[in-house]
Length: 304
Ligand SMILES: CC/C=C\CCC/C=C/C(=O)SCCNC(=O)CCNC(=O)[C@H](O)C(C)(C)COP(=O)(O)OP(=O)(O)OC[C@H]1O[C@@H](n2cnc3c(N)ncnc32)[C@H](O)[C@@H]1OP(=O)(O)O
Image (cartoon, rainbow, N blue to C red; front, side, top):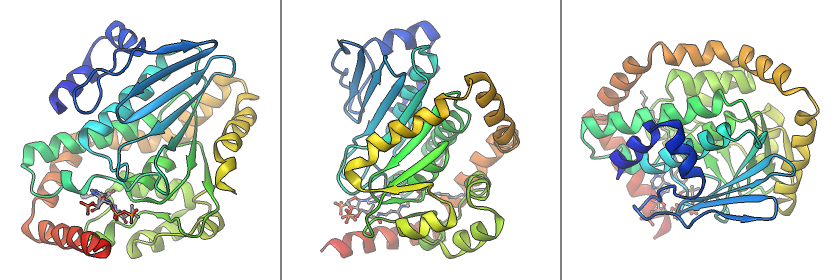
C-alpha cells in the first residue's frame, strides 16, 4: 500500500490532476468516492480525510480523520502531502485550513508503531514521508492556517508549526508541544529549527530539552499558537483570519514567506539523505527500541 501511495506521489502532474477530480486512493486501498461538485464547492474525500474547497472564497478545509488519534503513519503522511499538492496545483485555491475531524485530538504526532519493530528500509521510507510532508507544508504557496481542535504532541505540533497561523481551541484539557525527549527520542534539527522559528531560541531550548507540552493558554504566551477561541468558533475564526492574509497581494506574501523559510528548507534539502540515515540508525538502536516499547506500554496502561 505504501509503495502504491509513493508511486502515486511521484506520478505525473496530469495524473495528479485526474486524481483531484475524484480518484484519490484511500488508506486501505479503496478508491475514494468520486468528488461531488456542489454549487461552488469541490469536495474530495479519502478514508482518512476530507478536503472541501469553496471556490467562491478560495479556502479549502482539510479535515484529518484517521482514528483513533490521527497518528501520522507512512500512508497517512503520503495522503496529506498529496492532498496539499493537489490544492497547490488548483489555481482556484488560495488558502487551506488544516483541522481534525476527530474529537479532542488534532494529531497524536508520528505513528509510534512506524518506528517500533520495523525494518531499517521501512523506517527510511517512513522518514522520507515525514520530510516530504514538512517540506510541502513549510514551502506552500498557499496561506496555511492550523485550526487546532485537540491535543497536538510532537509531529502534530510540527504539522501545525509549518502553517502560517495557528488558532487553538481554548480548552485546558488539550496540550501542544514537541515532547520527543519524553519518549527517549530526539527532535531532529529541522523540527528544532521550525520550533526556533516559531517561538525563539531560548524558549525552544527549554521546551525541547524538557519535552514540554503546553496548555493552550501557555502555548499562546510563548507564541506557539497565535490565537485561542472557543472550540465551536475554531473553523469560522480560521476562515476569517484568512481574509487578513488574502488582503496582501499573493506574490508579495509568497516571496516574503519564501525568504523567511528558505534557509531552513534548504538546510534539510541539502542533508536529506544523511538525515534519513541518521534517523534509521538512531531509531533502530536497541536502547531506543526499548524506550519506545516502554512508552507504548505506558500509553496502553494509562488506558487500562
Ligand atoms: C534522529 C531523530 C529521531 C527520532 C525523531 C522522532 C520524532 C518523533 C516525533 C513524534 O511525533 S513521536 C509521537 C509522539 N506522540 C505522543 O507522544 C503522543 C502519545 N499519545 C498520547 O499522548 C495520547 O494518546 C493522546 C494523543 C493525548 C490521546 O489520548 P486519548 O486518551 O484520547 O487516547 P489513548 O491514549 O487511549 O490512545 C488511543 C490509542 O492510540 C494509540 N496511540 C496514541 N498515540 C499514538 C501514536 N503517536 N502513535 C501510535 N499510536 C498511538 C494508543 O496507544 C491507543 O492505542 P490502543 O487503543 O491500542 O491502546
